[in-house]
Image 1 (cartoon, helix red, strand yellow):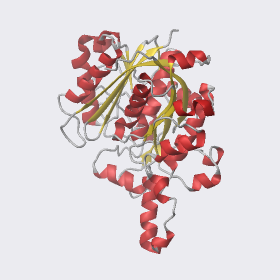
Image 2 (cartoon, rainbow, N blue to C red):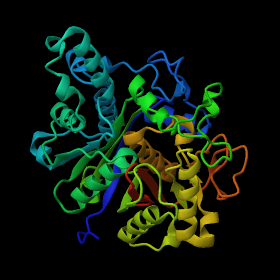
Image 3 (cartoon, one colour):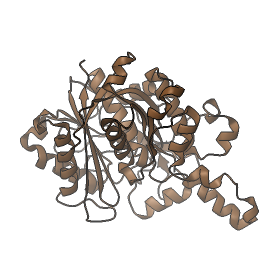
Image 4 (cartoon, helix red, strand yellow):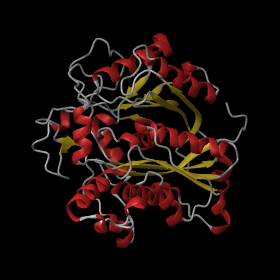
Length: 416
């Protein structure tokens, strides 16, 4: 537990998702229970066992970056730059030279520039090494999302990138939170970004039998906790937050969405892709986050769950919540953002923390759609199909990744 008593708040949000190219559109569509999952258009997936995904529609990178920079970076960086610019504008914050060294960047990606890697391997084989771009390496490696953000916006503080599969963005926000708590920066740009809806990624996840094959009903494919769930649906996009020490935010008169009050991590040490059957790892991560927040578990009244729509994962997350909260678990408002935008892998937590902050601020919890048949092992309140108005005050945000890596955050409604 960090001994520093600096408080950290969320002051800016930027979102690129399959439900919208900004936070307003995305949140509105989530509240209305709309699905962003459709047939894949980025490549011909007609021969693949999986033909659906949550693709970003209508995104024009040239609106956010110089055309030459667009060509020199893969799509996951394009999304990160756009979401960062939106988040900075939302926070009404411009990085000034005198503050540059006090602005950190911690933005992660689960996979990085896999589509460009895939294209380059094919081009290398067909046309030889001279056709490989000199911008290929810096255009695909995971830390160049953070690197390009720092370069383009002038952030000279601590700069890093985490890569922890589906827990990446939660870990990134947690790391940025600690950087601010320890006084190493006053402001941080943080979150996650991902863009790997490509032949090799879809084929790889399909080979693991991790993805839904409900190709005829894309909008109904992601169905967390439903009895007929058959796997997750890949999504893409970026969720970026501007977080600040409370002192810094108040001094400049910033609007505040929510306060981050706790962060916890754990490892399953169990399996490369399956969760531990007793929920041990998730339970310890949730406990650690709540302890770091210095609150009693009973305070948690809202969970933005990992909720991927996999048969085993949803069952184990439910089990872990029930073991930790006991009978209180049935009174917690739970939902899965992934039911509508799919699973954004390393970017998932970025958008989901942003959505959680907006939920705390607005007092309305978006639904988990496609709740049609109850699974007797998944019997909590998952906010089925219709949004619920509820004045929630303490949010637990769960993210769990391949390799048994777990990251949880606790957010508090801002009432200052």
